[in-house]
Image (cartoon, rainbow, N blue to C red; front, top):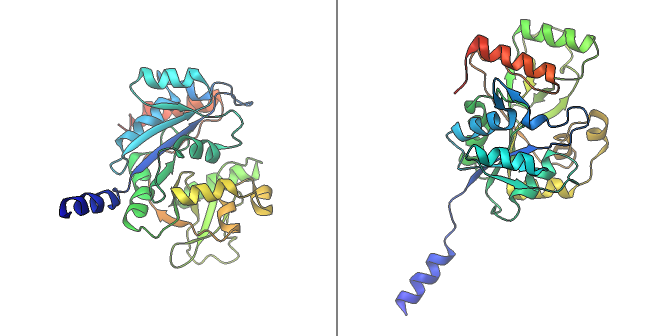
Length: 274
């Protein structure tokens, strides 16, 4: 009887939390078809992102969530794991959820990495994942960096020229996000020395939170700014902002072949991250 009871209790023990990095990779981009397989300095972009995720100390498992068998084949050729997801997924959040829904437990942490950000350092990934690991009550976290005045000037010039890239974030005293915007916020009517914080577009969610988000419909703020993270704020889901930095590295998102050349120049100038 005692042996049976011990086996029963053992079966009821909660398994350790798993942190799963998911990289949504969509071949069928209208602006840049085949983008995940675009080579940057001889390595497909999706593979570069996968390697960065593998190098992050907090990550237990890395999956590429693909919409095309060509991506799956490329990832597997490098020894990685990729899963096919539906072409009907509307965004990377839905694709990430579909990739993990059969294997994640409610309290597992899912880190959604941008497949078009091949120069995101592993320590930036760790910043968001570690705060979720160490604070089981958190629903969601995302990193941000304080802009230097020079970097802010460059961003402001880009905004003035009509470019939409670059999202800023403001947060409360407890580091909970108040708002994200494609505009530079807060507006500096007075220069109090408060930095402008640029949002880094990767997210760490509790699996249950990710499930909740994909079941919710986009709200007016999300639709207006075209920022998925506003869905969480519009529905009362708190987002912890984690401050980090690139340690002298230059961030880069690849939305066109021209951006790929920029990424190659950065690598040539600064060297590989890994």
